[in-house]
Amino acid sequence: LAKTTQPISMDSYEGQEVNITCSHNNIATNDYITWYQQFPSQGPRFIIQGYKTKVTNEVASLFIPADRKSSTLSLPRVSLSDTAVYYCLVGDSNTGNQFYFGTGTSLTVIP
Amino acid sequence: DSGVTQTPKHLITATGQRVTLRCSPRSGDLSVYWYQQSLDQGLQFLIHYYNGEERAKGNILERFSAQQFPDLHSELNLSSLELGDSALYFCASSPPGQVINEQFFGPGTRLTVL
Image (cartoon, rainbow over all chains, first blue to last red; front, side, top):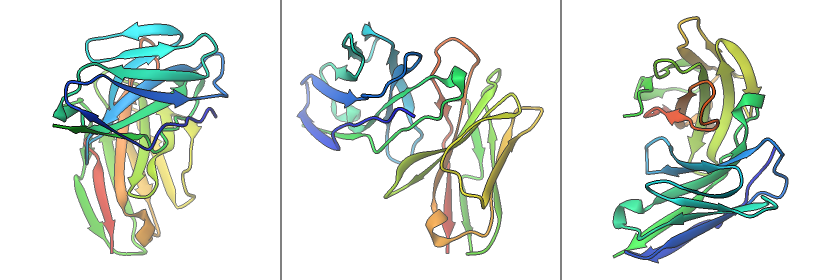
């Protein structure tokens, strides 16, 4: 089971770019790297997923180095509504792996 | 709205009791996952079912059990409840294939054990 390590909390000012790094030293060959966002008392919401190099969608970018032992979620120009907990997961649901969410990174955006 | 429904939204019960939480996945999704989230433990994976069969098991206590029915809805049964079982219980579903790890979470059931 590939576990992940993330900073417990981060603060950022509105309009800044935020980078949250996750380490996953024992990632398996078939594992994908997935990031979720969770607001208080709501279920997590999928943000982005990647296997290697860089992935970008309308809300975030995900950078994965060649060794895949870490990944960085980049949120461009954050706003107050981005205040949430961000989870990094590694796994492959097709092989029946369980998903370890950990405690995530609590991001607070300051006006 | 993710399309995943969970009932009830809130549940208050006493220690030693048994409760059943229900989850209906999104239309077309074959996988159902159960998670427990308490204040001090974060989001803990409990169990995963795929098309009626158990696929993976996480930190699920022996007092807890789950099943997925032929219509794909799932139930999580919690028995001999203890104070420490008070938590938010989330169900998630995912479609077969495509984006592998994208799970759609329901609104959760808040369980309070008194």
